[in-house]
Structures are given as C-alpha cells and as structure tokens.
Length: 383
Image 1: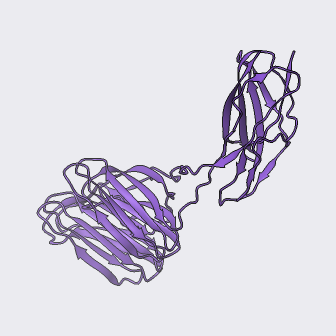
Image 2: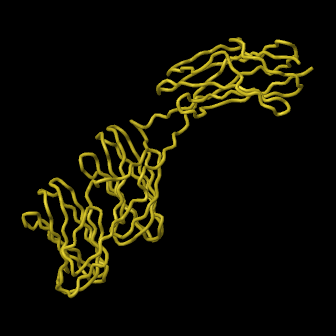
Image 3: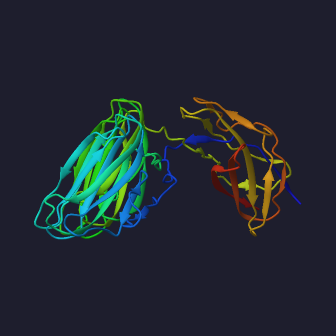
C-alpha cells in the first residue's frame, strides 16, 4: 500500500460576527397580590405589591394601608379607580404623623392616580384611600413600587425580552449597565390591542432621563435613543401609559456607539491547499501553505488543532497530528505567513484508494472545548 506524508501550515483568520446575548434572568417578573380585608385593617404592603378586592362603600368609607420605608427611598403609588365616577383620593402620613401627600384624580370615567414621593424619614408610613368627594362608591387597585426597585432582571445589549403588564397598575423594571459617552437605543412594542406601553429610563443618580409612550387602537411601537452621561446601573420602567389597560410587550436594547461590547471573534481556519494531481508514491508530500492571524483586541487564544482525512469511500482517518503538539497560544495581533512551506512530518495516512479525499482542520478552545472554527479542502489521487 502506498503512503503519503502530509505536512501543513494551519491558516487562521478572524471574523467579527455579532455576539448573541441571552436575556437576563428573572423574566417574566413575578407579581405580588395582597387582598383587602375590611376586618383586618390597616393592610400591610411591601414594595412591589398590588391590592385586590378593594372597595370604598359606603361613599364616606376610607381604607387604611401601611408600609415600611427608609429615608431616601423614592416611592411610586399608583391607584386605578375601577368604577365610573369614582374619584380615588390618596393621603400619606410619615412615621411622625405628618401629612406629606394629599391628592386625588377625577373623571367621568375611570381615573388613574400616579404619585411619586421621596421619603425623608425611616419607619412606618400610613396610606389612606377614599373618594375625594365622599359622594361615590367604587372599587380600585392600589400598587406600591420602590424606584429603583429592590431587585430587577438585567438586560444586555443586543437582547430582547417579552413580558406582560398585569394588573393595569403594574410596573416592570429592567436594569442595564451603562458607561458615560455611550449611545443606546431602546425599542418597545405593545403586543396587545389598546395597550399603550410607556417607557421611563432612570439614570444611576436616580433622575428620570426619558419618559415616552405610544398610543393607538391597535398595537403601537417606538424607539428611544439616549446619550449616557454617567457610569453605572440604569433602570427601564415599562407600564401602561394610562394605567388602565393590561397587555404584552417586547423591549430590545442596543448599543449604538461608545463603550459597546467588543465582539469576541472566533478563529477562522482557511487552508490554501494545492489543487493538483498527486501521484501515488511512497512518501509523497502534500504541501499546505497559509497564514495564521489573530486580529482580535481580546486576550490571547489558547487552541488545540485537530486534523483529519476523509477517504474516497467515506472512512475517516481522525486526529492526524500536525507539526505542533498540545496547546498553541495565539496572542492578539499575531500574524504569521508561511505559504507553501513544509513545516514537519504530519504522519502517515494510507492513500491507496483512487479518488477524491477531503482534508479537514478544526480549532478548539483548549479551556472550554468549544469548536472555534474549521475548514475543509478536497484533493484527488490519480494513478
């Protein structure tokens, strides 16, 4: 049987595909419901809670609630009147008993009260809900949120997530990491009819730097571009613009300019295999020239290289060793050309069959075992 000695230079190039990011943990976000109990008041609420079954009846009735707050907390109270002509009134007293909020909403139809307050004291706060004119009965939903929240799932650039706003007073929070000087784009799609998605963006200092919404009888969408001026954690809030509809939404976050993720390009093997007729003779040599390049700005690659030959009958001669053994270090900026030069004996592979052979190379990350890239080239053995 004739033998062919195979020698080669592995050729590496770099491609720059977009990195795919998985959505952050925690989607969908849980919702915590607390029932109103006329026989067990005040009702204790925690950040993120919303109420169920709350009713003002008779018209002179009022419902007490309480929550624990810390000085410096930014709190949002949302109340949706669920009955026509009912005008919910909200009163908030701090731990010393001082009335710090006294407000209401009015309307012929259902109205929504959306109130932000920054707490100045640490302790137990008391809330009271009633009808502003003490002349109507009605049901309502109350929601309390801390801004920013106690915890929120994190979204990475290039990712999209879907979730649902329910009940109508619900607010979903999504965090992302930003760097000053970076331009980002957030795109929001309402996925339910009549649902009007609202997007707010909170910067690391606690300032709302964007407040945008879209409206329509059918599904609506919009995009927001922001130039970030601070380093740190940003929060996006998704809610219904009128806090009177439930619905599904989708949000995507992209980095347009600045401190965007640097792609971690995979190694790409490209082989310049001579396409010429090979005579079957003992110790014939197959020359493979080429170039090894690491054009990445990332840390060096450590790779293992595997080579194989597929016979004309389909049989595989695996793991043919090449000129270097073990792990090869490919540092950033590495560029090595050695076209057409034999770099060493690669081992003996029986090539007694006439026909077309396939020569393959595969590069594997030595730490993760993930195949970075590979290439195939064909050659023919003739009499």
